Image (cartoon, rainbow, N blue to C red; front, top):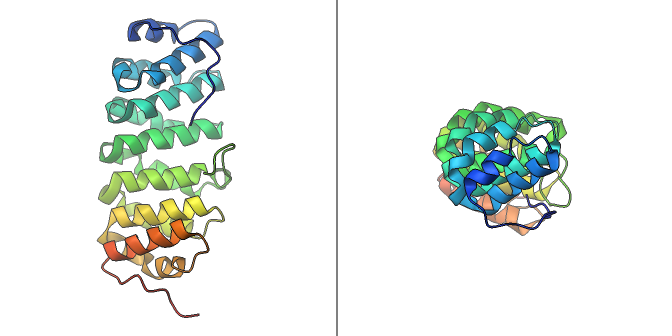
Length: 222
């Protein structure tokens, strides 16, 4: 999730911004986390420091630290435990960013699957996170899909997410079920109903999921 840059971005080494994550001024820490995120994978040496920043008392620092870890991508694997804990952060942007970061890590984040299931079931994660069109629940579904077959235990929670009011959550749930594969066959009846969804992206993902499960993407009558 993007945040507006409040400070001019200076071309300084990763170690500089890593050091500033410990500054007593929260605005300085916030900018340091943003700057590390702007550098993407090049700032991977700062992953442990960014993981610690997920417990910063400033929610703006936590938002930028979780965003930075998502931008670093698979190299953030050392932060899986901290990101998993971040799924219960009081701020929904932090929770969403942590879910996205875990998704970018992929199968190596399989230890987060139980926490992702709990996050999907948490009613506090249903609403979209303005100004974006997705919810924390939707991002957790997306991440379970990125983890793939190792997320097989999430099939039931993803089936429930197919009934979500937000179309992007339904779409991501269908995507995840496709990536889980044959062990998600309990989803077949609901996926078939999704072929009648009023939103085309949901219908398309449901069709892809049914094919992945060995079924013809034919919607039920009525």
